Length: 280
Image (cartoon, rainbow, N blue to C red; front, side, top):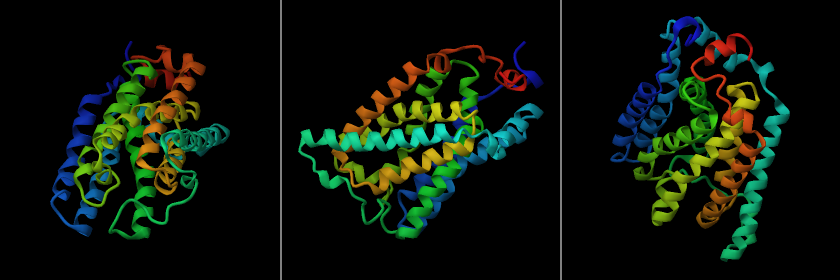
């Protein structure tokens, strides 16, 4: 027996459409100035959430619809202590990365808040809203359908690896749009490579936050918001963010080793919705 309600997840189609309906707005933004580009970026940002929601609504599966509703409004599901430890862990990662960067000639002045956001030309209010919207809207897309659609076919270790890589690559057009954080990295190819590589170990940590909070989207929103804010407002240099990727990878490895059954069990494979219906 495959899945209750006869639903078959379609991760390849999901990613194809999520990329398509993001990039058809982001690619033209490369050639447009200021607010016009920012407007297209904002529309593209919501594409995964729209695609995810439509996949669920049009699925014909009551179990899938009920699952999304529980993930969105089931605030009681959130294990707030786990979320706190995840946020604390990332704060430690940032602090340790700065300390380690001293060996590479970086400064303790990085233990400070930046005055501005990396999104230039849109104002502090718009930049803050972008970070907030990214944290909320992205997680509706990625956790509403995407991660489960991959996880249904493999263990959560490989799901995290694949999701992290595809999530990173989804940002690709942003490196060509003037005024974005990603475009600011193009002064050095190493910074660009580091940005895309860093999404993979971070994907493991976000998956962990998701699973230990009983697959709550709210828990992931809170963690994603904190990560985005720290990455934007702590005065880390691009060199230190390369060090940070190493520290994040080490933290992800520890999390995986400490939660082997969580990441490597295959009991849910091929029957994720059925397992959820039975409370397993």
